[in-house]
Image (cartoon, rainbow, N blue to C red):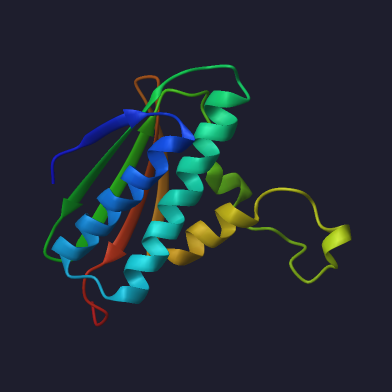
Length: 140
């Protein structure tokens, strides 16, 4: 699929979700895998927009691209915010604690990582790359 670049604003989230749904459809993903992928991309994109741009008083774009191979659908989000590797927040240790005792943040990233078959991050040429991989076939 052709990459798409959108403004790094909350108003762009619907278009990002639509792009992911289209890629998932073209890759032949089932409804559950599609839902989990859309949720994962939405969580990371919302964090990029809210924390990487708005709270940092920065403006920038988000580029989304999808690559479909025989085995996988890979979706990559690219942004120009400050470097942030979400994998460091991907394993909250207090999931069994009462809500009032839990640390703030990290649960969305945890759910993101759990929702796809593989999640990766890279800082390349001044850009964050959040990479989501979903197997196209359950028996793969």
